[in-house]
Length: 438
Image 1 (cartoon, rainbow, N blue to C red):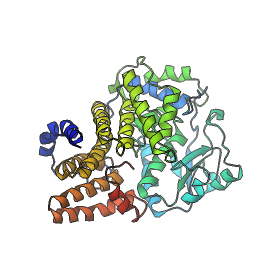
Image 2: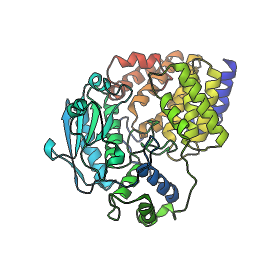
Image 3: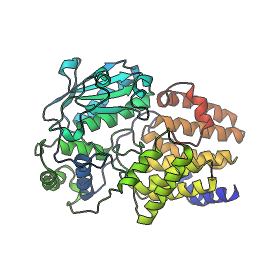
Image 4: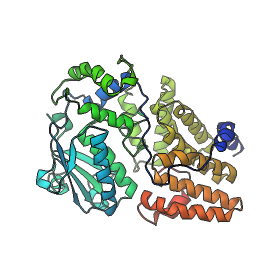
């Protein structure tokens, strides 16, 4: 364990003094969603990403035409709707209208709705899609119809324009999971049909780090709903319009120029999906994650593809080889430090390392890392991981004979955990698994 602790100290403590000197109270209370940051990415990369998001599926299949809604969108909420859902839906629709430029409103009439958000019990949903938290399918109006048709769906590639779509979310999910599902799946129903592994500033990435639609995501939707674009346009036609549209919507992003493709090989993307599959054996996930990280290193990628591969290799290697896991976390954090909007990713790396320090009975280091992660988690309104950071801090304080502070933190973690996790039964498990990813 000595080499493990040395590696962590080399990684963390050179910046500890600077960070701790800035640890004043946060202006954002726990659970409050902070304003999204100003977009700083280039229009060149945004244009390239937009085309890949709309003209390619996750399977790698290319699409021949652009699709979106060509009329004001009506959304209805159906099924066993949990109370937590109502506080998420209307604020999200306001953001989609105001920031994303999408003409969307809620209706109470299923027959008038373009989009149906249906809540069903998790067990019922998992009988058909066991490894998916929530999903959206085109040309369906209800979960019952989806089941009756044998869970067959109309391929996105067959759409001429956007029409009827069904979003299915487990009714017994935690509040945070409901929010995250609403943001990502509703955005997919309205816009991008693809996820891109290199994006560190978007929900359109299967790393599932960002839960709320980001400034980049809203720009993508606003682009999609500009009057110059229409369903049926080819990739070349859309590409020809993007420079002028981006100059209008994001003038600070500069002129649009060609950029190298960031699409990874298909085998790499497929294995990334497998590493995230809970039903796969842990040793298989570790071998795959190590292979993915090594390949990303060999290609010299300097984006989320490589950073997240190292994160996964570290996470899945914690039990087998803690020293090696910490090396992966260190490389992941180094890469994220140079990426846009990656503070949340770095916070999740810090939580992993805080758990390692706690297991090594190093409470001071645990406390520092968990506190360091807290600000980004608060700003992202990631209450599940913020609750975990509180519990890590509380355990560290307990070991430092600061019991009163530990008790206060545990109390403060309860409302966060109540939103971030599906029930009280999850809390002891969170504490037992402190330092592991959700």
